[in-house]
Image 1: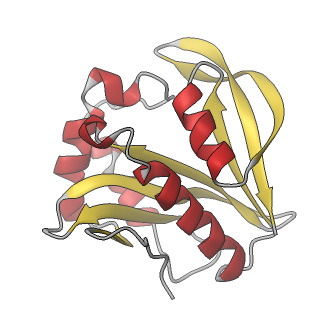
Image 2: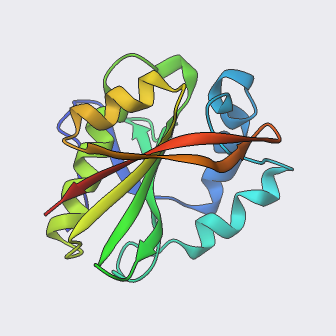
Image 3: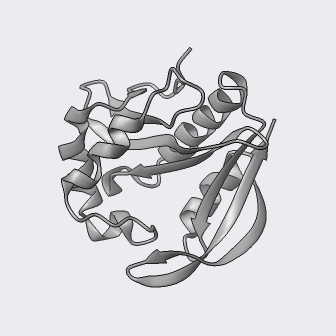
Length: 171
C-alpha cells in the first residue's frame, strides 16, 4: 500500500525521471533552498536520487512526488536514507514556494512517516531541521516528531557549517 493524502486535489506517487525538470525549477528558486543543505550543481544532481528510489523495497530510499490533479509537481517527500539499527528512515520534504503555508508539507510528512512505521516496519523515523528553519520545525512538531538534540555543524548550508535539530518519531 502506498502513502496517501487526505487533502482533495493532491496525491502522492513515486517520483519519475520526468519530474526532474519541474523539481529542479523550483529548487533553483533562492527561497526554496535557503534553509537546506541542498547543493544543486545542475539537474543531473537529481537523477541519482530518483533512480535510487524504490518504494516497493523496505531497504531502499523511497521518494514521492506531491502532485495536483493535473499531475503537476507541488513538492516531494521521501526517505532518502534507510537506517539499520534500529530499523528506520530519515525523512525529508520540500515544496514549491507557491504552496507554502497551506499545511501540505505537514500532511505529506505525516502520511509518509505513518507509512514508514506501518508498511515498511520502521521502528523510528528521523528528520533534521536547520536551527533557523522555524517552518520546518513546526511541520515536524505537527507530525508528532519530538526534538532530540542539536547537532552542531552537521551540514553545510551555502558553504557554511550549520547546526541542525534532530527530530524523531517512534513506533
